[in-house]
Length: 105
Image (cartoon, rainbow, N blue to C red):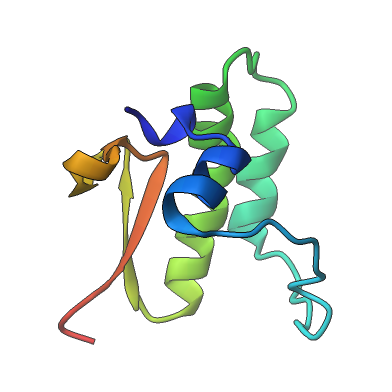
């Protein structure tokens, strides 16, 4: 079963995970966009973005790269990698992005 095949009901029944709405970012300060990120995002306005994969590569990845740079390469970005956490529970499949702490930092 792919991660995307799970429903909220599946998560509740299988793992005891509840769904609730909350404002996760109410105390997070905004930071100005870097010039590189502004240029990268401006390009996305003129490119055809027809799929979720295209969105992730053209919009999300430049943001993650900018965050990585601003945080002294604290984390590594993996895109489209398989993550098999527990195959017997259905926790296996391809993830859009995995962020992992760099062990050297």
